[in-house]
Length: 439
Image 1 (tube, rainbow, N blue to C red):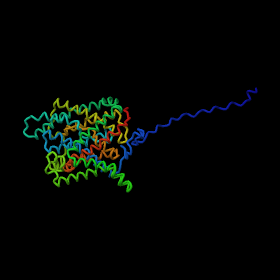
Image 2 (image 1 turned 45 degrees about the horizontal axis):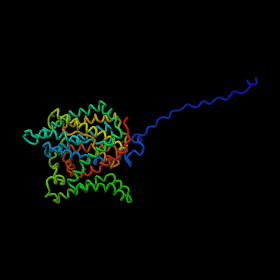
Image 3 (image 1 turned 135 degrees about the vertical axis):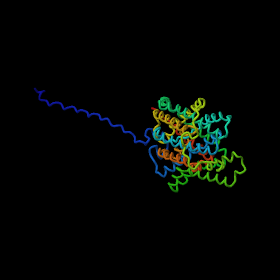
């Protein structure tokens, strides 16, 4: 009975149920996917953030000028070999610019959605020159007839070869292969892509040292040292030199070249030196039409040849590798997540569609990611996608209004070459610490 009068034991407290904390996803555009030390230092605007509209317009125009340099270089290489005149070169440049604008919009809106500029690739120089040599001994009435015939054969080869990229991309074969990419593979790929700018840069600088070398030195001094000097005076001046120094340098050296031309400094030199140094020897201003909208099959019906098509397929594959490595460099410089395999597949498929359209609209070479514009992202520290999308407006505008586009296309090539020499180091440097992976 004594045991029954004892009070009952206190109830055991039941532990509260465990509540799963919701996963907090980082805000879009913050770039929290990488640890801070892996991001590009001092990035002012990442892929999703946008500067003011005035800055967007100025930077978009600068991106247009940078991609224009490689476009003019490519056209100056292949058009004379095909038998074209300065007027033909002007129309080819217009076609390149028009299709670069269309393809850049495709990639920034649907493809990787990274701030990448799509531009005519130098990987297509070898097959295009091979096609041109095949028609050197044919009996044509004029060089213009030979040029149009070569252009039609190039169009046909590009249309057929573009199907390879579409198959690799939209069948996800490229994505399955891209899963094998590792830092050991991607680092040399991107560095080799950047090294291509040296091949375009230093030989062209040497062809007119009195213009190319001042541009190279001035750009380095203004970008690296002048901002530190003015930092004690006004922060706004430092900002302008850091962000827009390249525009200032292009204007100064271009004016210097115009003064040398007007003063007769190149009147008694060789014709080759005059073509590289003078500001009036491209003949683009006099031969470019005022208004010309690129239209399908502007050179005539494409000519399809099996041999030419297979040769062009090799360039298509090279451009796919080049673009894949360039996408990784862009993601680092723009503060974005490295593109996964599915996105790379979609990008390569859209690149194939872009090449198909280029063959239809009469551009004699396919496109890939512009490496020099990637370097410009690091130089300006602005990785905004909107800047690249607005730059397509400049591409399309100047491709239609030929005289205005020819004015800027007449900038001496050594000036552009010096810019390429500077932008290489910016493209290659971030990839040495690359540690991203594909999922």
